[in-house]
Every structure is written in C-alpha cells, then in structure tokens.
Length: 230
Image 1 (tube, rainbow, N blue to C red):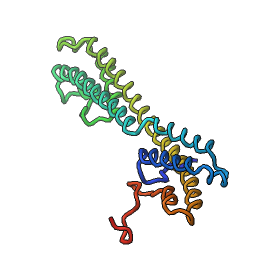
Image 2: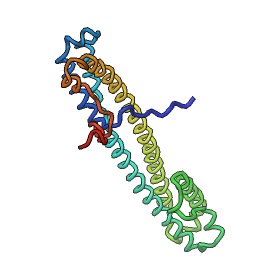
Image 3: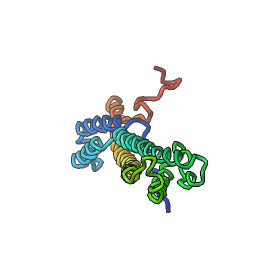
C-alpha cells in the first residue's frame, strides 16, 4: 500500500517553528511549578529542546535543491559533449554515404537535441556498434577507433551522472519527508504543552496566557481580521 503524502501541520516556516519552540520552552521553564501539577517537568522540556536542536541541524531543502541542480548541470554538460562526439561521427558517415542513405539511417541517430536521456544513451551505444563495423569504409573520412572509444567513455560518464541525479532527487524527497515528519512531531508537542500553559493561566493572568498562544498562520503572527485590524 502506497504511503500517504506527509503534509505539514503548521503553516509557518521551519525557522519560525524553531524560534517559537525555543521561546515557549523558556516560558515553560519560568512556570515549572505550575506545569508540575499537570505532570510536565524539565525532563520533558529538555527532550523537546533537544528535538528542536536536532531539527535545526537538518539539511534544508534549499541545500538539497542546490546539490540536485549542480548534478543536473554536470549531466547536461556531459550530454552536450556526447552529442558533439556523435555528430562528429555522423558528419563523416554523411560525407561517405550521404545523409539520406540507408547506411546513414542505420545509425538511428535522428534529432539528437530532442532525445531523452535514456534514448541518448541507447543512440550512443548504437553509433559505437555500427561505427565499429564500418571503420574500414570510413577510415578515409578520418574516423578512427579512438572516436568511438571516446563516445563510449562519454556515454558511461553521462549514464553515471544520470544515475547520480536520480539518487539526488530521491534523497531530496526522503529528506523533505523526514523534515516534515520531525517538524510535525515538534509542533504537536508544542501544541499540547502550550495548551496546558493556556489552561493554567486562562483565568489568572492574561499576559502569561498570551505567552502560550501559537498562531498557525504563514507569518506565525495573529491573522488580520475585521475584529483584529493592523
């Protein structure tokens, strides 16, 4: 059964979650005696603080995205090197047989710039295979085994970068999912603890009650309404 997509329970940023979490822990420590009556103590608050610290040290999606982009750029650069090498062979084949000949079409190159990554890999292998069989006839055009060996090498490098790109995409998805789950765990605990804080001060101290309010908005601040104007 496919795992359901993990979604955030909070609308504000991870950085805001970290800031809010540390702020609320400070208030909880201030009110330790009051929280003790509800079975909450320093051990639990310290554990939450440790969770928040670990969360703040996680690789961010910006970093993961940057790493993925760098691999993609390397892969695209290698793909262009490979296309250039293939074109160098096909120019010689066209010179020998003509671009409309059956021998030219046997290489199955088509329009290189429109080929998918997977198709480019197959095309490169086919060019090497067919080109190797026709080396004798194409020697007069300057085609050598070194040309074909270079295509094989570039193709191997391109395929390796393609695999690395796929792995980076997968890693990024996993990291993002883990980050959302960890953030949700912290937020859920904060809601429980701060709700207790609100209950403690609801009828005793408005200022302290407000210390435990978490606004689940994009800004992390109170939403602007007609009753609550800026």
